[in-house]
Every structure is written in C-alpha cells, then in structure tokens.
Length: 179
Image 1 (cartoon, rainbow, N blue to C red):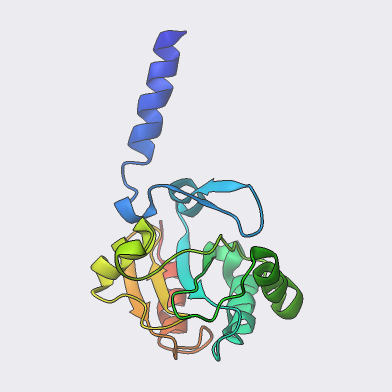
Image 2: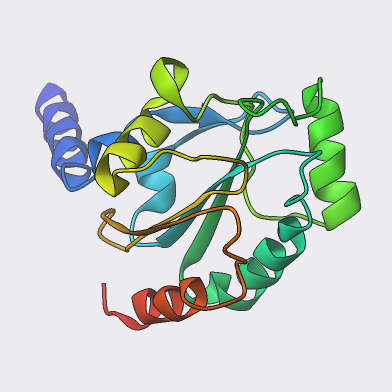
C-alpha cells in the first residue's frame, strides 16, 4: 500500500512539473472557504488573469469578460478574477465585492479573495506574471493571457477591452492551438 501511495505522490509531482512557479499554490474563492490549486485549475486551459476592483472606471469590463467567458469556456478558456485594493477602489467587504460581480455584472467565472497585485505584498501569481511580462499592473483590470502550457503569452493594460483586438485575436489563436 505504501508503494502505491509513493507512486501516486510521484506521479502527481511529475504531472504538475510543467506548471510554472507563478501558478503553484492555492487561492480562496471570493466570499467562500473553498480553495483551489491554481496548477490543477488551469491545467490545459487558456487563462486570462485579471486584477479587478468594484468601484473603478473600468469595472464595466466585467460585462466583456463575462461575455468572453460564456463564448469561449467550452473551447478551454478560463478567466480568473482577483479583486485588489492596491488602487483604493475595491469594496470594503468580500460580500460587497461578490455582490458587485454577481448581481451587477452576472460574473460566473472564478473570482478569488482580495489580494495585492503590486510590489512586495503581491501574491506569487502576480509577482511571477509581472516578472515574466516585465510589467506589473499599473491599474485595475490589467490582463495577463496564459497559454495552455502555462506560459505567459501577453500582457494588456487596463484600457484593453476584453472583446477587442489584439487581445481577442491572440486569445482565439491560443484556443485554436492544439494542447
């Protein structure tokens, strides 16, 4: 029995070996106790990571993000939203943030607990993405596009709408690529 457990442990380690360091670790769902391993959650998916805020001029991008998710999730798109108060525009409580996302914008893609996305306090995901992209989020709704292999494909500033090129074209190209 110990031998089987060891084999399963080693297989799990090797299965996740292709996962980049910035996706290693767990994050808690927004307004929940449920936690997700980011490597497992994103494995084989095209991922769009977005730092969000409830009370920002770009908050209306939730509509475009949700439309993108609805259109492409069956083709392997996963959008991950990370509320952040790094720019002082996030709701005070998680319940209020969740209400803005779900009630006001109908968000169904995974949203996680509030995190820091810049500087020394940034979570490993955003530190790693900033290092790979050579740019940290300068404002809310910065977007990082990650390929099915877990590697960063592109980084887009807040003004880039989710439903417009060049993000849309690169997303479609990544989805069309065979895993």
